[in-house]
Image (cartoon, rainbow, N blue to C red; front, side, top):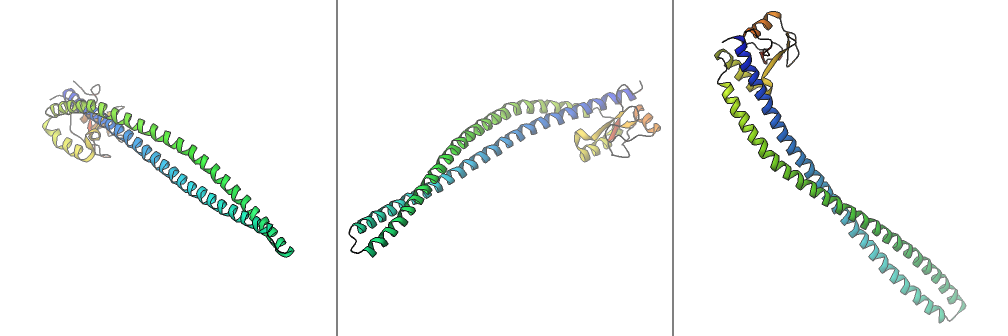
Length: 242
């Protein structure tokens, strides 16, 4: 078998391996896209759950403040009634002091209630935003899953066809190349098993400069692995002699 014929076979193998690698990479990209959308959806749901928990706590605060305000208002009314029936100046002055304290307490509770209601309004707005984020994330996830389903089926068909072409090409490998080829595929994977000569004298995988005699032997069709990276070298068709 001539160097040119071997170069054609090895170049064909190299192209098919790269095509298979590219197709598998595209499948992985689809999976990563779905995984990213799933993460976004989980984060959106967690954010919404946290906002809902905040609302429940805020409602408890509002309820506690309202009950405390009602109790304080009742106590203030009771003190005022006592003031009207005070039996001495001393008792009257003491009740006035108590009423002033209760009024301050009522004012403070009213302020706290307003603050709690304002916080509740803010949380409600955050919940609306969080719900919209969940809806958007859910929509994006469904789209990513649909795209993965549609594109993955196409890519799998292309991969199967490429694998069939690879098997046909591997049947053409010269006997003295088979051992080197199988070992490189096992060690580096199909896409990384082969390395073309670049610029006439460099390994296309590690860019190591090769001795001139090795370059000549590779171009003549010899089975040689790069002494630096271990890849099986082959000559681009334009470098191989007839």
